Image (cartoon, rainbow, N blue to C red; front, top):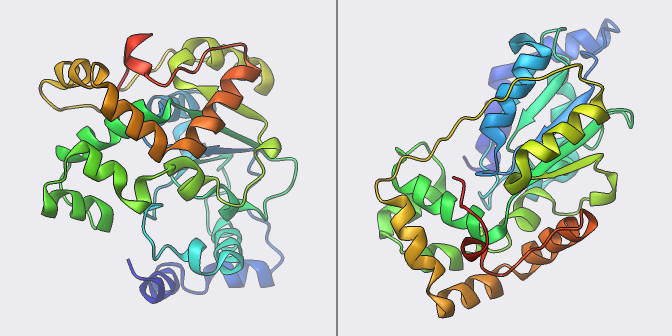
Length: 271
């Protein structure tokens, strides 16, 4: 979706309801948790946990933009994107307590400081490979980067070289954000352990062990086994994602964990 189209689409979808609600002094729902879903980093499973803990009506999914798109509104006008995000909250069901989805963290920069902000990370190379192989089996849905992958039949390394895919997390999700402001950062590779820590932080009395695997490509494990042995390819992928690797190492180091260049030689890969 182009920049101007995103503005027009917002106006058509929302109309004047949020404006009227603000004029009448109505408050947005009391959101208490902002959950940034890094693509291919356990976010689908985690959404199931959130829905079980808070109730399906209390979890609002924000997947209405393609964070890789160079024409993303937040890239063009961050202040406008923040105002629109805040306006949209006035149109939500009053039962909403959680926002979860793919979006730049700064998009919700106008939320009250008391809202907990959390995310899950994944080893950048493992995340990239999972993203690539998942998109190979995904129907077109209007994402220009996905369309480019399919139109040009890109290889993994060609896909990784695309500007939108280099340092994907820092470039598309955390740009301009201060990660110190996050209340929790989990690691997908330690999902069960970190989920237990998050439950303590949030005061959840209990939560289900929800796991939803969205990988569908035949021969996925064999492809990863071949990738793990290609040292030259691994080195280039690391070089293309130096920022994300540094971010991941910082989080791993704070938790007393290792963050090797090659994720497939040290632990079982999860999709």
